[in-house]
Every structure is written in C-alpha cells, then in structure tokens.
Length: 389
Image 1 (spheres, helix red, strand yellow):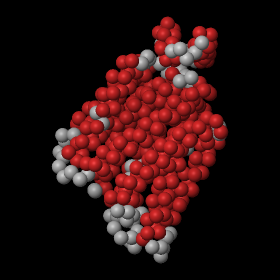
Image 2 (image 1 turned 30 degrees about the vertical axis):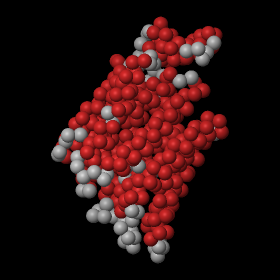
Image 3 (image 1 turned 135 degrees about the vertical axis):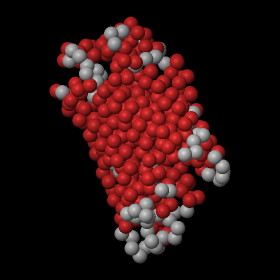
Image 4 (image 1 turned 180 degrees about the horizontal axis):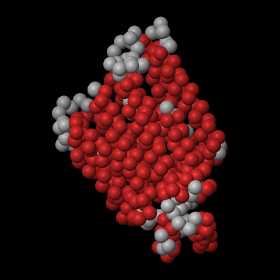
C-alpha cells in the first residue's frame, strides 16, 4: 500500500473527529445532547454512502472525513450523555462501557473483513462498509425513546422537563424521597456553579479553577492517545504483524483473540477501578504496564539478533497482544470517565469536546507519522531481514 494513501485513509477520519469535537460545545449549548447524537448518525451514514460506490481516491478521502465528523460527535456526546444521566456511584462504569462497545465493534469488524477478504470484486469492501449503516440506524431510532439529559435541561432553565427526564431515567429504582434528594442536589450543584460564573463561554474553561480542571482532563487525553502507545498499534496492527513475518491468515486470529481478551480485561478493569483502586492510582499503574509492553515490543523487533524466526514472531505477537489487552484493562477504559468527572457541569460539553479534540490531534499525529517509520520503503524500523515473509 502506498504510504500517502495509507496515511490519508487512516488519518482523515481522525481529522474529522478532531473538528467535530471542537464544535461540540457550540452545538450542545444550542441543540442538546440527543440532537448531537442524531447528527452524528447522519454524518456516519453519509460518510459510508460516499465510500461504498466510490472508485477514486478523492471520494474515499471525503467519505472518510465525513465519517470522522460523525465519530467525533458520537464519542463526545455519548460520553457526555452517559456522564450526565448516570447515578454518581455508577458514572465511571457507564462511561467506561463505551470501551466495551468499541471492542465488540472491533470483533464484528474483524470477522466481517476476514469473511469478505476471499472475494475478488467490490463486495470485498462494500459489505464491511454497508454494515456501518446498522448502528447509526439503530441508535437514531433508539434515541426517540430516551429523554434529554436532565442536567442539560436545567442549564437551559427548564426544571419541569428536567424533573420529568430524571423520573423517566430512574423509573421505580428510587424511593420518592431518594428521587427528590438526587434532583435537589442536581439543581443545587448547577445553581452553585452559576453563582461563580454568571455566563458560560468557551474561554471560561481556561479561567480560574476551571483552567486546572481543563488541563487535567486534557492531560488524561494525552496520556491515552499519545503516552499509552496504543495508537501506534491500533491502526496498523495487521500491517505491523504482516511485515514482521506473521502469516496473513494468522493475523486475524491473533487480533480476535486480543480483542476478546481485551473485552474480558475491560470488565475486570471496571471492577478494579470502582472497588479496588482510585482513579489516579489506576491510571498510573496502567501507564507503567503500557510502557513495559511497548519496551518489550521494541526490543523484540530491533535487538533480537540471532534469534530464530519462531522466537521473534512469538515475541512480537506476545507483546502486541499484551499491550492491547492491558490498554483495554486500564488507560483505554479510565481516561473518558476521568475526563468527564474532572470538568464542571456547566462547561462539560466545551471542556470534554476540547479534551477529545486534543486526543484526536495526538492520534492524528501518531497515525500520520507511523507509516514513515514502519514501511519498508521509508525508515523500515520494524522489518526484520532475517524473518521469512
């Protein structure tokens, strides 16, 4: 695959997500969380529709960019919505569930592309693309049956609608007294924030105590997208393994194994994050694991002089899998819940959107530069001459 084409089809969705994350705050203030998710579904559908019949690279680039716009809105608004509707003691778990669905989606995508790779016509890529219509359609319909975020409605001075929304969300799970207490605390929290800041503007997240909150949230995003090393592996795992000598037919099995184990690790991580460790300790331990597994991968690909083909392949596979599984257990799970908890309610859409934009920028930089490092015609860092391809 040409380096430039490889870069662009990988990074255009990230660029689109970066842009949509930046405007998420403006959109959210005017139209709400549900409207943002509906627009996200529309962008995803349009992006897929452009790519399916396309026969030139320019159309693919446009489709990938529009798809990225939808992904940015989906990521931002789904996490904000979950954070605002969840009971306080379940907030991290509900936001963290997005990681589970990403892993499930990865398994479905891998199985689909593996099944269609034996086709030698356009259906080999059109069928996997067509499946991307399913989730936006289901989500768009499901949104008709869920209420708007009660916290958003309170910020728009609609207390009656907010009460009705919270009642719909909680149902009969709370006693009337417990429901009134939760609603009163929600109202009080927003009123206290309004006393501190009479207006809500984008630049407010860089003032006073909100500046510290915003910087901490952005720091967690950088730790995830840049510091973890995951985005060196995630977009290019298949290519990375193939040019390192692993047979093409085996790559799919290793990817599915790592994703399924990552799904299990994600559930274990949610338990540990809630019942065993605090957020900071959990993130620090996760970062140490990420660094060690990346170091092991680097040593396996560059310093294993004289080792046999089988030994090198096993080391590469082991550290790739361990890193991806550990990422699902720790950093990939914890960063979004922590980011949504750190920022203030009144600025959550702005601050979390900006945080996601920073994350997407780092991911874009890593994804754009990686082909120069790994492709044989460029720096060729991971190609091992002694390995049989």
